[in-house]
Length: 200
Image (cartoon, rainbow, N blue to C red; front, side, top):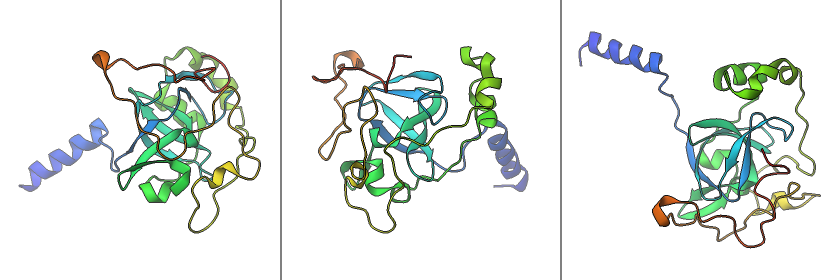
């Protein structure tokens, strides 16, 4: 390839924003809110149906929340409701951790994040309130242990599932097949709510 052609391709990539690192593909294991920040007080972007595919772009250092792309929307989801393929088996993200899936550790800067992804959204008009808001640590969540992890480590030490949510799936969870024209089959029996603690 000639230098001029190569340079043109590089500049095109920079202009259209082709990402340098690929996202980690996964699935939602419950009907869960996609939040506009890593706290349940942030406005909901929408409810991700169980088994919908998600691209995981990064997680907080304590792996309590992850930054994801779903159906063209960007936002934050509870990590234990994200499942990824590991050697042919679907595993909850915290079981193995971000390093096992090649997911980066990221921080949340609300003004940068909202200005990138939410300009024009209904809640963007209240951005000054949210720019001043300080996300809270998740109740009952603790940082991953050092070294190798035991499956379900995050279920110990005072963990409780978020209000209104059933406990996350353990081993053996698989995405629902997409029958009936690709429509989602709906909540599983026993699901009381389809979001973390309130409807969007």
